[in-house]
Amino acid sequence: MSNSNTHGAQAPASPKEPDLKTVRKAVAASALGNATEWFDYGLYAVSVTYLAQHFFPGEHAQLMALLVFAVSFIFRPLGGIVWGPMGDRLGRKRVLALTILLMAGSTFCIALLPSYATIGVAAPIILVTLRVIQGFSSGGEYGGAATFMAEYAPDNRRGFFGSFLEFGTLAGMAAGSLFVLLLQLGLGEQTMTDWAWRIPFVFAGVLGVVGLYLRNQLDESPVYEELDEEGQDKSVLEVFRTLFIDYWKQLLILGGMVVAVNVVNYTLLSYMPTYLQDPVGMSPNASLTVMFLVQAFMMLLIPFGGMLSDKVGRKPVWYFSLIGLFVAAIPMFMLMQGGFVWALIGLAVLGILYIPQISTISATFPAMFPGPVRFAGFAISYNVSTAVFGGTAPSISQGLIDATDNTIIPAYLVMASCVIGFIAAIFMKETKGASLRGAGLPEEGADVVMETDLVDDAK
Image (cartoon, rainbow, N blue to C red; front, side):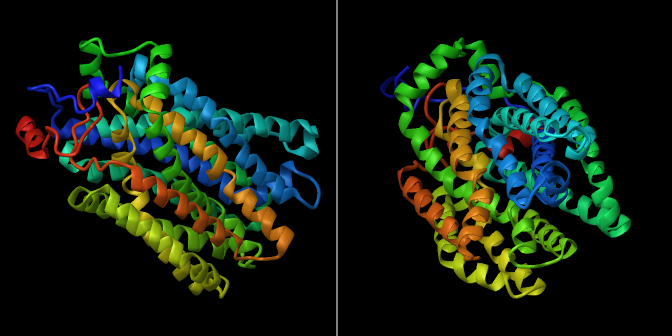
């Protein structure tokens, strides 16, 4: 398959569409699975202090714990390489069932892991192994969930429905922050340090079982079923060949945009609990309260960001976000060092400016590839870029602050990532309202599935 043969291919004349109830179930199942993934990631981020004390002896324990956080991202590209072509070959649903099982299971096992004082160096080795499994599984989880949701959503409202995947992201991270905060308030710092830090990791296993059940209740995405019926599914080798020969530009563009998405994400939402405690100097309870309030506020705004992109397009909202974050990064990081209220305001401003990016990921990135290589294209490019630039952001920020005593370092990293993202966004084609059906690249203005069609089907 080549660009010249498939670019602009028309959607089937009379596509069979799921009804609105089924679309909502697909959105809920995808969002809950994503919430489970990010509950796991967020939980590790807000528990870094406890994990450092139990698994890493020495004065650099906290930095070591952050480096282990980054380790999982090294294996996300491998997960993308394995799960992505499998999702295009075997179906989105099967891969998503496996990834959520691995993700939640490995997080649950952290709750059972003996400390360094009990089993010595084996403790951090096992912790790293579990984080590797998390990284490998999440390499297919996010790309698969976004693709699955995008292929179920009506074309003219893909931004709105797709935004609920990121609603799930923030819900998972906010739930992790709130869970740990309530335990700290109810049980006290000493009890948390002794054993209660393990409780949220147990709960992650429960979330995974619920997410797995919901996903198993759904049919395969209608777009994938259509491709399968038409014989458009490819072998794994064909997926790789098509992707890297015909769609290498899309891989680079998506990777550049992901630099901005994930450096900002992991700086604001994963590293911030550590940053607000050290070097800013806030108490653990205060820093977690700031995180939860900002994440909850962002959750409320995310659907509106998706709706806006359906009206004006993906590119305009991305430009607004990237320019806004570049301008506001240094002032807001300086403001956050003034105490609780100023930290809340500064982080909230940056969070609002980030909304146009995070709310449109699921609508923007899957539409950059044709159906037969969509899962693989998203998963590979997204996870390679995330591994290099996203998951390493917290440890790089902490290491540079330790080396330079400059507490504004994270702002510089955010600004640099926004420049890269802006350059990539210039080359991205607008896909607002484009149909994802067929074997060709989606194009703005192509035949679309309207939400009114789904309402009629539901009746």
